[in-house]
Length: 317
Image (cartoon, rainbow, N blue to C red; front, side, top):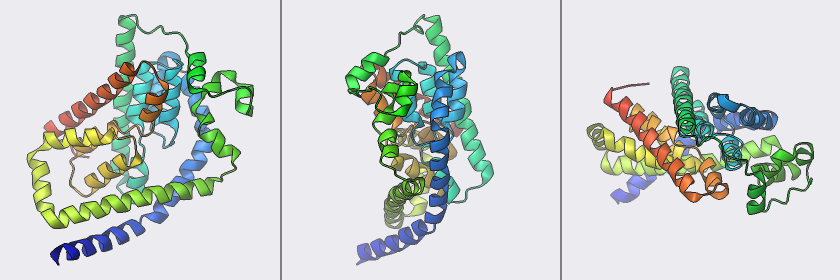
């Protein structure tokens, strides 16, 4: 009987807490879809042509909520058209679903600015450091791999679309698998925003339901006390969750922070490594595989390190 009461209470709270977020999420995704359709290609071109300034450009553009930008960066790196430092800069600054959730939850503007600023700064610093280290080791001169990437992915880029005809160098781009097909199908911005809103709303509902069940069963005070007594563990756990290449990861981390379950350090550790589908595209397109494992391990170390330092010094946002 008690279990039924807990579940009923959790369902009620999860439903109404999620329901009030839908209008904010839809408006946010509508703006994001419009931005991505207008500026997505320009952003990719800016990163591709940035040269030594790649990490700076990548970090600044990565923080803009464009769903496919981390995926584009992965493909550009797989073809060696951007540096490893630029890839890290984009991954670390990518906000994934964090920004829409913060906006939907009407988080303070100061908090949003601080989180985005930390991601940009960490992305730039790490990106430039990696590129400098590779330069010292003389490992920064890799030949382009566009042809090999096309052959491996069998994209059959033979002038099937206007973008390829106008710019053959972009023939390998990940958009052949996703955005070109999306555009050719004539899916509207509003429909895309509605679909994304529905997907994230489902994630939020399920996560909120789970949190409500856990909170009601164990007790919010007990969970908060455990996190407070084990800050290092919470940073590691959040960073590991952040590596999950799905928007549910950043949604969960953001919600846990807003609920007061995670501290600022743990939240930043998890959000820094939340590169979304960019990691999946990297694993699919880049070779050798050991390089991909090294990138993922590096992201995890950076997330834990930054989160750990923030936690150790008691940084609050």
